[in-house]
View 1 (tube, helix red, strand yellow):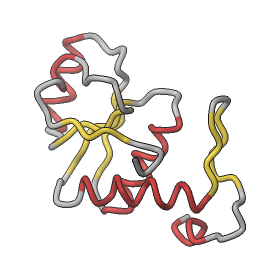
View 2: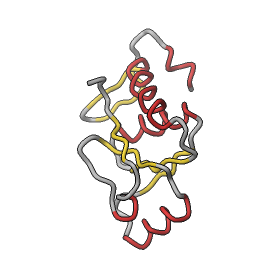
View 3: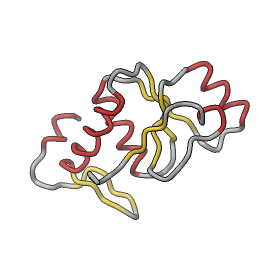
Length: 116
């Protein structure tokens, strides 16, 4: 998969109703995530049907960091269990959102699609 990130032809890598990312755009966005999570053993990723979720997972994988997918609609008990069991060092989430429940006390890393 990582070889595909080097595709210079602008082919779509991720297609969502609101946004499409080419392989090179995915490479750039996931590289920023990888740099932000470097040094963590595990990170939580808010598993939402959003393009930022995909970018977060690819970025964590590129950094060699385990990504723990977390359903943000989980109840407080389940979130506490996941946070305690997985012990993520940070939470990856779309810009402008907050981590739910037991994950709220962890460092938040916003996943940006554009280098702004």
